[in-house]
Length: 637
Image (cartoon, rainbow, N blue to C red):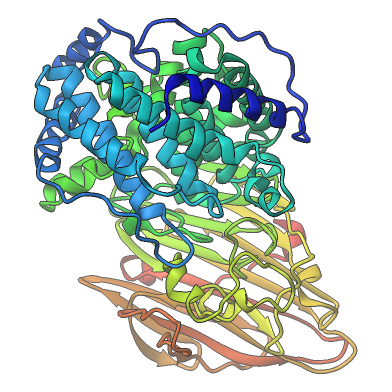
């Protein structure tokens, strides 16, 4: 056990090391509140949460769920330092959940059992040899968890426990982030990254620094200022210029939640913030998330997104409160109805930062909710995306999304130019999304390398063959290419977006352009225009669907889900023959994909040939009024 004197001595040494870190702090003066609790919720502010709980049943349900889970944690097994592959992350997240829930429950009820159990969990993890700094997310989440418990339970912790916990925050949390040894530099790469690591790791370090500030003010101030500079120079740029988050739906939830918690902690403990509500891209990202959400429990799940790992988009409660715009919770209200109606209420309470929703939400947060006004969202940046609807709500609502960007992007798949399509609650053109990382890494797949021939592209879900693309000559998309949404617009009865995909094809064809559109309010068009190159090139057009497929002719098929039917019709200036392609695992590291199939066709682009392919997705209920209509060239859309 370290004494406080030892801690102070060690902190001074670390502070000297910190001056060697590459980034230069902005010089912001830091004055941290003297009293605990200082993070997020001051003493006496529990009554504000009580008032929110009384104003909205969902918030009351969240509160009761936290208390109930805290009761379960009273008999939870001791956390052990057991890694999964290279990660301790599951243990860190378990600790985060337990400590945050238990600390909240103690503050809201005064029940000493919760405080005692939180103290036990903190002491258990503080006795670990380290918090796995070679995978720094593990350190960040563990540090944040222990900092919350230390701060919120400060008055009921014994002096011995305070010293152990404080020492661990400094030794196992903060110190590894300022160690500039050659081997350790790679562990703090997140300081210059723009992805979710930057937000999460800076949040964890800042929470630790704010919690133990009085014991090492120089070190803590440096880390706090460093965190502010790092997220402003990196994380916030992820939301620019239009709000669409490069890593997609799931990682927006993760990175944004921790970024908001960082800002809230700075405001509560030091009276300074990150200016989030003044950053256009960040604030518009709430609209992006609303537009990304589909009926029931769906979303546009491009890149490493897994809908099954999401419950609610809890950060949207912060945005709705800050903007006084409850329509930002339109999709969350629908998800709550879905989960409640399907007996899956527990899914709403799975987020380890769940107590934060009671800090973020406004009173009566679901009052006056109305559908969003906009039916189209286009965002550029690192991962451009176009999202459109015919209207909001109802069984005939059509959702259509087009994903652009680069294979080099964080968590990206080889899916540039892919599309998805929903009608009502059914998804007809789908994306398989995420596969558990360790299930691939243990076979030697290098997920962090996104070079042209990286093994990252070998797993079925991550490579081209599971996505809704044209693949030329079985060749990989070029990872050094970047595709934007070139054209988009809307007029009565027609919404569209188009992208030039030529740079992805490595010269195999002279041109490839794709456009997607909702037309006539009831059906979808996918148009591909191909300019042949110097030699014949075979290609495959395919779309993944969770439907039963019945061919009705060489160029048409009926897709079935439940009682719903969708017609897929191909119109082209050449003869084609539709067929299906299996989605069964190809390699031992591939995840199974039950209930899905690819539908498409194979053809060839001749030298100098110009050809087009139009694929229509038409609901069976509208098929009687559908004519195999003429589709204008993309330049005239």
